[in-house]
Length: 261
Image 1 (cartoon, one colour):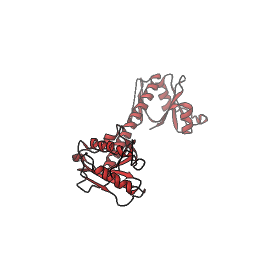
Image 2 (cartoon, one colour; image 1 turned 120 degrees about the vertical axis):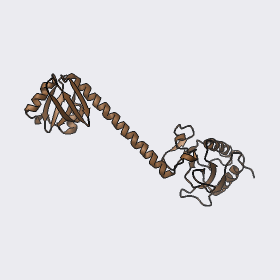
Image 3 (cartoon, helix red, strand yellow; image 1 turned 45 degrees about the horizontal axis):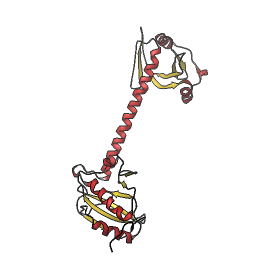
Image 4 (cartoon, one colour; image 1 turned 90 degrees about the vertical axis):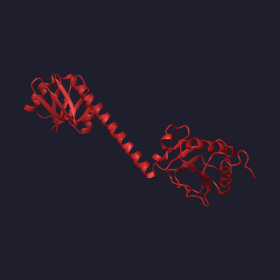
């Protein structure tokens, strides 16, 4: 008997698996597998029969004989992997809604944890429609890991650059003629001398010194090198505390904590 509107309401899950299963009608690069999860076997049979009568082109439809580990029966639809893949999948979902009612469909891929709604702009990134550039799940995961690593490296570089620029802006309050930072070392030139120090941290004096465990009671006497360095700083001062050299300006809250190279 033909299904009527709403006959499969509350029997089909909104999350549809994409490319999580191996196709039977061809190679993975050429064939995509769309998998519906159904709560019991008899609505699974009904959904199988309903999609079989669909006008949307497909290569094969199959119903799993047994439930999966989550207790759901699966209806698999194999489709050509081409530029029309997403459009054809959406067309099938629209037809299925005639018997399930409206669902907030989500696509689940084997290479990412989250699912993607049809209006999510990220969906197209994970929907593989070109056989020539198809990646297996492990290859796709590796590509995503590389992209993530590159993005994190870029963010760290940008953060380091911003941090360096903030330090150089701070040092404009000195009498230094020139200053630059490379490889976490700050190179400074005064009217008569030059100096190089390793950057340890920079920021609000109270926070930075507490974070590093610096105690002002551990101030050491200036040696000839630090006296020379102080002569380059003008109003700014460099004070040896513990194993650090703390550079500060009397009118600013920030300090630059350094070490001798």
